[in-house]
Amino acid sequence: MSALILALMAGAVVGLALGALGGGGSVLAVPALIYLLDFTPAAAATASLLIVTATSATALYAHARAGHVRWKTGAAFAAAGIIPAALAGMLAARLPQPVLTAAFAAIAALAALKMLGTTRAPADGPSQAVRPLQAGGAGVGLGAVTGLLGVGDGFLAVPALVTVLAFEMQAAVGTSLLVITVNSLASLFSRSGGASGLDWAVVAPFAGAAVLGAWDGKRLAAKVSGRGLQRLFAVVLLGVAAFMLADALT
Image (cartoon, rainbow, N blue to C red; front, top):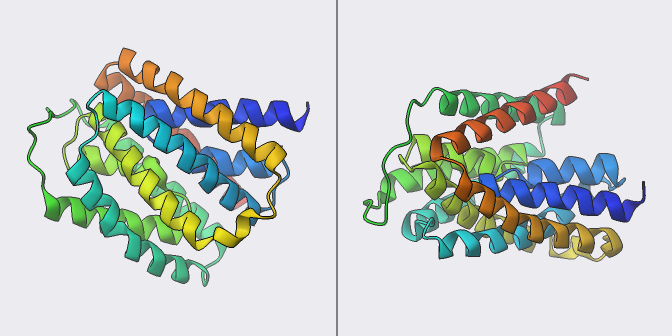
């Protein structure tokens, strides 16, 4: 199968995940770029940031039009995590990669189980009070975990928004896309010199398919109940955790 077809297929899946679930972009994009398209880990990380930034911004626009983005809370959440992510990233360079991968898998699994154990989605709406201290605290924790473990995006942001800030699932998905876009742009800025050596014949169609897939993901999210979407997200998250744990142990 040609690299172009693989890039289009993988991009569609990444976009669908981001649009419907508010996360999973880098978790899915990085393995696809490495294992399917023969990117080096460093090149895959940079390419993933480009793809996820474009896709999450597109999905954010779609969710914002539907009123599913809590801008003030999301901005506080995202801003609080920038410095912890940078500091934790420096610490991560001193730790073995299998340890980091296994730690991420464990945290992802715990988040999924927490969401599966939630019996109902909390009420939410435009009038929900902004809680800057809770948002900031959750953002600091998420930023530290994301910086330490390398990949986090909405797979950790969505559970945090649901379980810590009591967002209903659709608002958590939309708001997580704001967090992803901000964090991806910040990370991409720090890697600005790494984009020159990328294979744009692969990255461009991957990103294009992901952007189109994000619109389909948004439509899918609108057709699924908040509780059903929460369960789907948790099951996918468990699958990602299992895959990453197996990769760390082999």
